[in-house]
Length: 122
Ligand SMILES: [Zn+2]
Image 1 (tube, protein in one colour):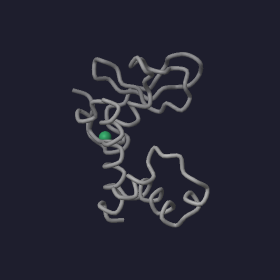
Image 2: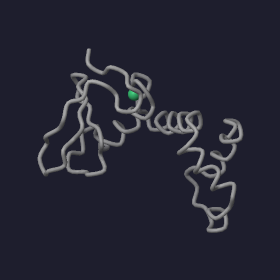
Image 3: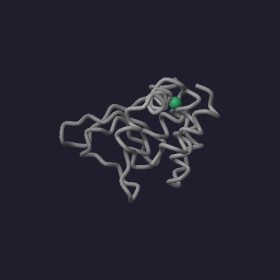
Image 4: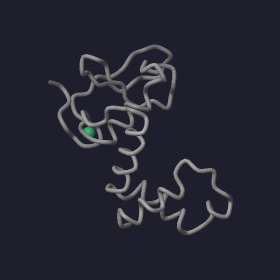
């Protein structure tokens, strides 16, 4: 999908309560598909979301990483250790890890971004 077209649909659909009719429409379908399948659309929509929430996404290797780190934090910026939907943790020292959801705080430290392959350790 053209990014301009996507931005248009985003303005109409994002954050709105949509009627069943809209949700069933081909346009809405195409919009959702674009988020999942079109990298330019995904990156733009994710940057918009993180920007609107005041998250400093520009210091991350990629928007996927920035978004997953954002999702791992609560309103106070603390890691949500007990949330099984969290797939990545980042610590202040610049360490990244994959949490092991066994009830504790254990994790597997990773040295490369699982999404874009950038080396993470300094
Ligand atoms: Zn990355």
